[in-house]
Length: 410
Image 1 (tube, helix red, strand yellow):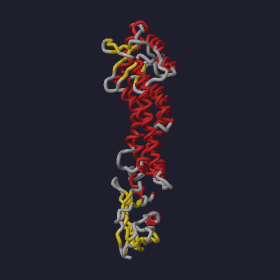
Image 2 (cartoon, rainbow, N blue to C red):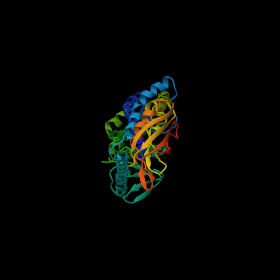
Image 3 (tube, rainbow, N blue to C red):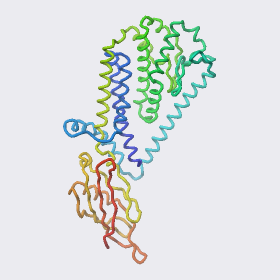
Image 4 (cartoon, helix red, strand yellow):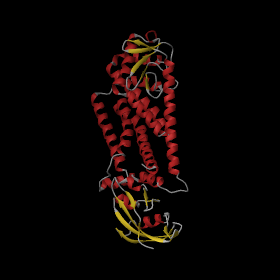
């Protein structure tokens, strides 16, 4: 995949991902108030659903839905046009390099934070099915490990918490494991690395972790409604981590603590409310995924200027796909007659024939002026020549503008 295509894909993902993140952040509190904390946490599926949907093939069907999607597609079309702009240097390659470097730096920084926290734990001592650290460490109790999750307890676990509180803390961490929250945290960290330049994803990560803890609190309280007071006391006694590592679930993480305590006073959502919340979230996620898919410019790959070669192997940038033809999925052919000067530059060009007429002509003529050929040779010296260049635009996933110049005489 060319650097222009990758940059266009990153820009499209940034626009669609930012919209999905903003929607999730806007809906999290209303959903929590209406359906409970678990519905607010589930709403974060909006983000991966939108990002994955934009990678699916196809485009919106004709009719009212297609017309509505056409308006949503404007930012994505802008990303494609921006990525395809020419400049005095290959800025797309430089931007791609900067993006990759930033993503790697972010991943290394998160890895270092995770490793520093793990080193601070020191040796882990068996504690039944769980593990206990041998020295005082902030941020415990916690659950660590994605492939093999394990609960890590503070050295003073028995003395700090009463019997009921210990059972609640362990129940909280086991809910994290059962729901796959550590894998969700890994996915959130990966998105932060990919979109390291977008502050919205970093802000959203904290909100996501907070909703994760609230949802976990709600599950535990629903199972032990008579132990609300003990659960609140356990929260107050937890050792808060000044900066939680990206791949852990911490019982004491999720400020403001007042909000977690306040939720303990609220009635547990009934089964009917939970079902209604699941339906509402499923509709939201499905709608966002469809909007992201439908907002993709039709045959988006066609907008990428592919590199073709002339008969002597000199690279020629292919003409871009006209926006109107791209949106309609129109294919076509243009035959150019190009006069090549002795230095290989284009002295003149004209359209010999085009099908359909007038659709791709301007794009072909505009781009051919930038071409430079290997001049024809006669008696060991370069001479002026004329070549016939067929260019074809094909709509579809294997699309692009393809050209193969062919000599047609002096």
